[in-house]
Every structure is written in structure tokens, then in C-alpha cells.
Length: 126
Image (cartoon, rainbow, N blue to C red; front, top):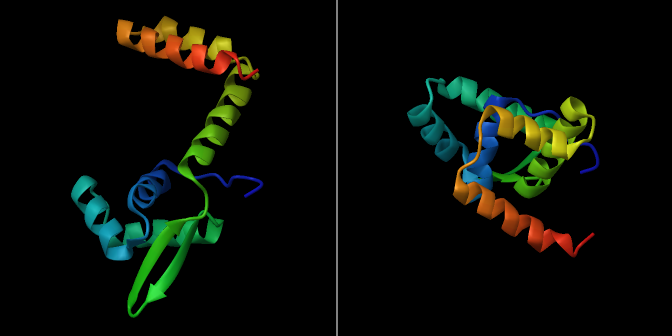
């Protein structure tokens, strides 16, 4: 998928369910979201249709049931989303993003250790 379509926060909630357990039926998606949100089944079906129209979900009909699978991997979506976020709000400067986060949120010691591990792992790749 060359250009990633914009996915709303609500559509992202649907995608998380599909990424977690695809293939997933319409009923499974609806049941999960009805219990976790105040959305109606019709709203959820509209979100699913939008995701199919955007090309990020595909489906297969089995009897009277529709089963959905992602057309884009979660890792790819998150990578592109985070990259565009850094580009848009921090002019591509990842260090500025981290600095802004640290200034507003701070990090626990375990977060710092996890980041050090990630940085050490990726240090030799560049």
C-alpha cells in the first residue's frame, strides 16, 4: 500500500480488533465495540464499510457472514503514522519530539532503560 489513507480514531479502534484476531466477523467486531464503547451496531458497521472503501480492510463472505482481514499490517501503519507525525509537528526532528515529551510527561526509570535497549539494538543498523 503506497499511500496510507487517513484513519480516524474510531476507525482505528476497529482496526485494532481486526489486527488482533483476523479474520474477524462483523459480529465479533460489533460485540467487542458495543461492550467497550457507547457506539450503536449501525455506527460500527459504517466504520467497517469506510475502512473497506479506504482499502485498509478486506473481507470474505462465508455463507451469510463477512470476515475481515487487514490490508495493511499494524506495524506498517504505526511506522508510517509516527513518521508523518514527527514530520508534521516536529519538522522531522525526532529528538525534538522526545524532548517535548520529556518536558511534559517525564519518564520512569524502566522507560529510560527500555529506550536505552532500543537505541543500543538499533545503533549498529545505521
